[in-house]
Image (cartoon, rainbow, N blue to C red; front, side, top):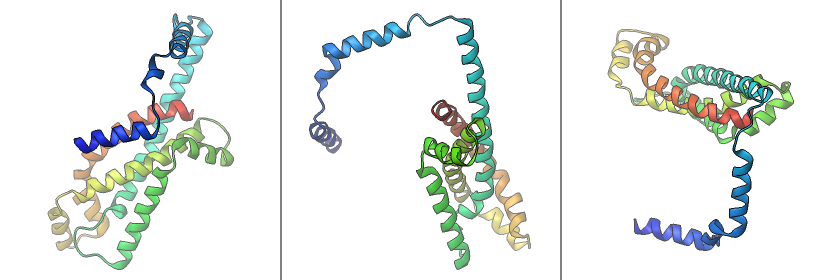
Length: 201
């Protein structure tokens, strides 16, 4: 606790933050101007209709984004998860590459992805939805991989001992038990995507 207080104090001193600026005359004037412009809200019919249409576009963009991210996360969760037991060098390299790819996807913010996709696609809802979907895939893919890593390995081991193929082990020993946590993560990321859509849109 003491270290945190010292770090905060040092950061405020280093950045030369002045609490007096919060109550300065300029701040009060600007706050009064902003509040005066925001209230009372405009009740023009065309404005409300435009806001309603854009709100629907926002929700639709976030739905497409989370669908793309969830599909990609389900497909990449297995390769991205670290195996519980021994694994071949090829499997370890593939897992490291997938985790590195997911890290790259989530390291670039959605507005930057949107700018990149605007050069490939025409401006519109699809570009924004894919930009959000790519970024959310980076986050959701890693969360899905961690959920897979934390599962009890015994059902997988039993299926493998009975001669099941890796795809069968994934479908019957991993996917049903990981579906709950991954769906919860997806719903949380959908909420975040809706907020991000306002900026990207």
